[in-house]
Length: 164
Image (cartoon, rainbow, N blue to C red; front, side):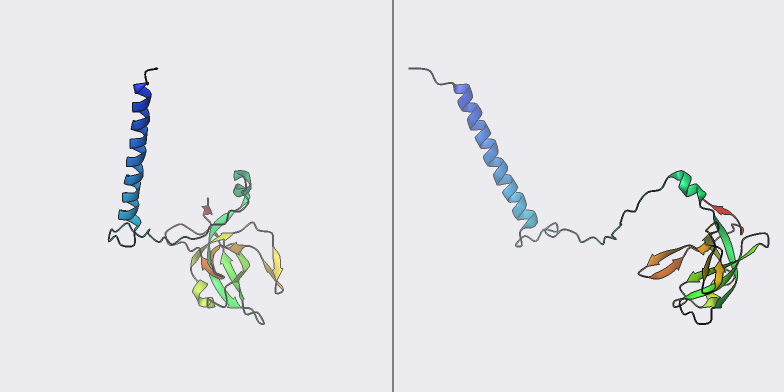
């Protein structure tokens, strides 16, 4: 009669015992932390507020550097007859260089909101006729559910300073 291999027997018993202890331990952990009867604070996972970020096509640094963004000051803002969502702005680019820009948001902002404030504008945008007026740039804004939130400069940076 062959002699049983005691080492294999002990190894199998040890693996079985470890497995049994592990399953009992994980069951205990699940009960303590995730059971409805448990008063433990980790029972319910925290609720996080998440803003969905939708990826867009990327551009190269060369493309980005082609955009000329500057600090500008709106010297005059006025409504456009017959238009309810856009305003006509006269913008100082620095050194007395004035341009006309058409901007949206007239349903949210009165013309006097813009006057004598510094904004960030894209100034090398190709001119475009909007409501019969040539727009020579664009003020930058964040879009909050259709409402523009303007990028305003609150500091001592002079008008005409390039934004990078």
